[in-house]
Amino acid sequence: MNTDIQGTGFYVASSFSEQNSYYFSGTMFDDKSIIIGERGLGLYLQNNDFPDLYSPLDGRFSLVKINTENVLARTDIFGQDILFYYIKNNVWAISNSFILLCRHLTFNGEQLQLDHDQIDILKVRHGVTQQLVSNDTLIHSIKVLPRNKVLKIMKGNTTFSLSDLPPVLQNQSYIDALDHFFKRTIDVNYTLINYFEDRVTVDITGGVDSRVVLATILASGVDLSKINFMCGKGVGDDYKVATKLADKYGFTITNKSYIYGQGSQEDLYDLWKLGNLGVYFPVYFPSSSRPQTLIHYHGACGECFRDFYLLPANKFMDNVAKGVSNQSNLYALNRKFGKALSEIEAPVNKIASMIDYYWNYRSRFHVGRSTHRNLSEYYVTPMASIYLARAFEELNQLEKEKGSLVLDLFLRCYPDVLGIPFDEEEKNYSEADINESLKRIGSLDKNKFSQVPCKLEVFYELEPRQQRTENDVSMFDLLILDLEKYSKTVTEFNLFTTEEVQSAMNDLKKSSWNARLGINASKIISVGELLSLKNIEL
Image 1 (spheres, rainbow, N blue to C red):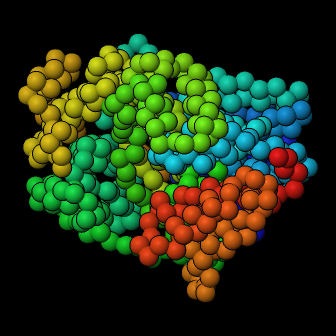
Image 2: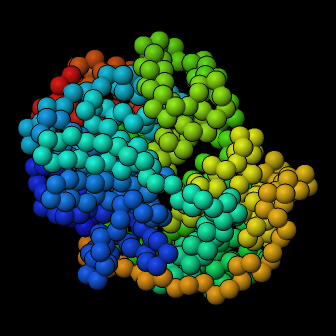
Image 3: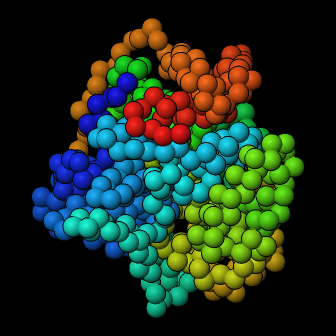
């Protein structure tokens, strides 16, 4: 099934069909404007020049510009909305959906070849293999655009180059970078929360990253009663801490759910495929077939600013190897993992290697799928900031591992939020930590960001609604049907065993469903979907 992608946020641009001069998905902002969705970019262009792809743009987006002589493509600096590209002979193609790109290429006669190392990696049961592990995909000739890069394709001879985005605040200090972050984020918060009014959701937990997001919202001076604060009641001390924050700052944890306008279950299921197959394997189905008039604040990318893994790459892979009995699968993972580290020049025996790995791979594939997530609500991720990325570069290795940047943020801009302990003792800061931070940032200035925020110009136009439909076939049923349909093909070609297929089916039939129970089915369906296309070579 091939769903009509018009208005969904998914797109494919190629030498086969140059119908548009640009493609855009997500949210993008600078110091003057906020652009939301492709229609929003269209409104912006009525009175403004096309955004400079090399300029310091923030947000959560992907953008493709097609000129007369070349094609330019990039994502936000953290690569949250992933772009896939294909360049071979005189053909080029770019999409923010892996499966959509494969469908488009094979429909137009391109021969695609499966990467068997990638299939072997799917057999490894570990957190690192719940998403792509490198910029390679299940198809040899389709690659992920690295974060912080601009792809430039010359149309005449179909040559291409990858260039770094220019550094921001190159001649300014660590403090300047922190202050730029807060100023821009406060202005964006003030604008978005007042623009969307009662259609704003903010995740509030007992952890660190959601506290940073809360600090930026408090500093924005907005009416907190407009916001739908959400916190799950069954996760550790999250709700207990969140309630204390609510009492202190006068907001209510409402956990309000919204009724989404949506199309058929078949359309929604295919949109899940476009956003996830071959990239991210836990199964989270979309809530709508169109981007929603909702803004959802999330602490994604916060873990980029501390050591997520707590060990170097070689030790990490040693730990993974302990749970892998099939040596062929382990060798495949080692090859791709090693290639991923080599591409970012990360030394395997240093803890820094896994901080770099998290930035460039796991973070973006794990919290990515922006277009898919936008079918529930537009995600706003304040910590995915060009200015925080710039500040992080200034810290020494120990400060990076300890997560010193976040403490500096709190103390520099809104120290009051540290008055309530976090949900786990190890997340709290010691007096020594605070003293070290004050040496980096100077004395506290509680009034530093007390000025009235600037209201930015918002460019946004609601996508046409599709009526909510009732359908006897649920997305979960369609998942089972696909697993049944593709099981024969993947076993006949010896890509998966009968036992592996049956194990995936057993997971789906467990009484207490969660997204991780769909991982193995999602992996098998990813391969089966590719095999169902014409012009796929084993």
